[in-house]
Length: 387
Image (cartoon, rainbow, N blue to C red; front, side, top):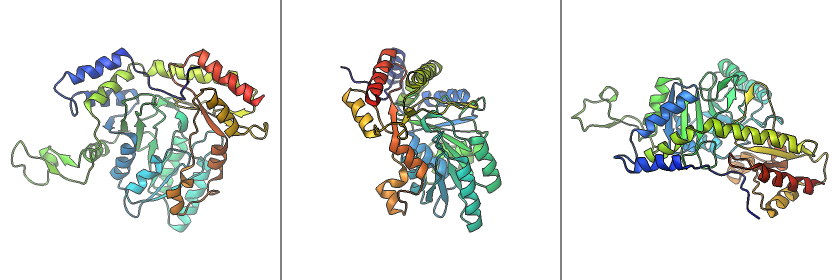
């Protein structure tokens, strides 16, 4: 019986040829493939600027730095995410806090955010940055968050690591109509892969340039940006403290080739998600939300075991699927329950919606090359376990 992973990369001969072409060129690291990938990604996602980075964690980190996050800053994010969504604030020396999720969308709750902002204003502890997370590829309630940002004076960094190719209010995620900066991930199991890598999009040219400096040691070779007269054409100057968060030309070539198939891969993900909805209908499960104003990228298809309708536990269903060689996973253990965050003062019970979701959640296999037969097999095991 073959193993069905919860997700996997899709690599074609065209992808391989694109990478080989770079290997045969004059550039392996910083060459023409990176700006080509950035320009194409920005155009596809409705943004003016895109800055490629080594991974999405790096993107989140320099997004915070570019917006001035440092010691004394406050950053809020969702507890239902990967660790990087919160760690990026700690890297900057900021204070981190969380906003509980909406039980339907599993994204940051707009009503919980509004209530927390009102309380924070009364105590003088408003956040500098809010990082909503597009969990599983479903865009967060960005329009409402933008209205709150304008009212309370914070900036928005959208963590769209799951949402490459998603749409919100008829426009691609990644334009900065609502978010100041948007961060994407190109990890191996993401919508588009560069093996490791990420992208930050924005419509603000000053922020884009700051991101470019921050990803490469804070170093410039542009005379107009130098603080002292250059000694010669070899001159470079470090104008701020940056990091080495650069993408390579090899990775960019792979990403650019993958963009050729983004729409096709997304269409297959949508078809598989639609099919899951049909096949799982009537079972004691809660399925992903469908909202008329947004289209998920369907990075994940996450279900919840509805314990009000079945005595079968999440662990029992998970173990049964794994025993049948169905590579399910769980996304995510709430960040605030991790040991490091408990040492910062967080504890179980702080964000009950995120904890309730986690206790029942399973991510089912979903990837563009998944066959209907593989999906049928996964659903058959689920039906048997819940019977």
